[in-house]
Image (cartoon, rainbow, N blue to C red; front, side):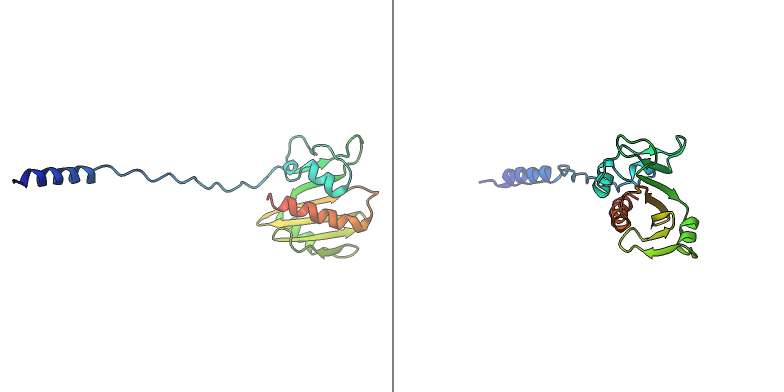
Length: 165
């Protein structure tokens, strides 16, 4: 029996199968990092604000129609002063507030962004937050809200806003 043709056929078959183009590896799904929010009215939702303050608020509106750095959320059905005002600020302004003195009390607010603190004066309490080089400040303008509830509400909202910076 002549085995040479069988060996040639077997070798040719193995050669052809080994020369096949390999299956392409699956293309990995690119990981797209979430983009930080730069529009003040998109840092918090009316639902989040309503939950923290206990009063319904409307969709946020830019304080100046030509700028997205400052937003206010009015109480639903009530005209006048907004319930919450939030604005982006400069790092210099953040540092100035952090070192305020006189009739101003500065209280650290750990666990919010990279750094945060409350500023309390005769005008009320505001929360200032820094995450990286981005800083925001906001204050609750509800005159009926007891002072002891302002800081916890601002803390809740601050954590939510900082997560989007």
